[in-house]
Image 1 (tube, rainbow, N blue to C red):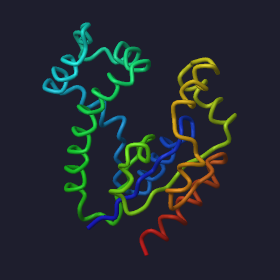
Image 2: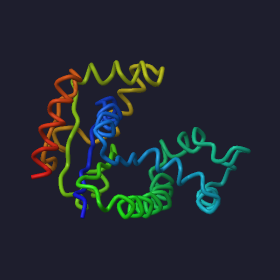
Image 3: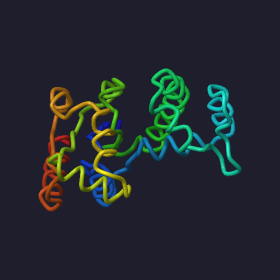
Image 4: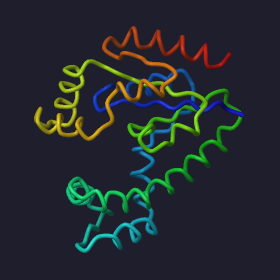
Length: 193
């Protein structure tokens, strides 16, 4: 039975780059955001999501994610309803993923809200990816082509690293990626033993 390793961290901490590196080592990786997008493309899920909104959120190519994002950003109740549809569908998808990779030593699962959703309890260990605040802000501004204010607003909506550290088994400061790779290799060795 594969050990399940959860990877989490705030916006701009570099989780995606860490996951790419882990994949390059030959381990199966599961990206919850990507899975969420994929699940939200299924016709039955599209219909369920549309049913919670008064206005039309479906375009010719599927769900209008930007419109949905704008609605739920300021409406915690709608966000909760949306999550109640998407999260169980992603959980089911991940269960299938685990079954497909049951022979592997380790399976890595990435989610920014792994701890907030209490999902971390399903994992054998949690790795927290951190980076200095200014580094994170610069990364997200460049990646998403958005203002500093918007990045700070998004950060404000996430649990702080100090809280996450209380739950994580390992922490990787991902400022210098060569150091990060070395730390990943060390942690993988420890987890496998």
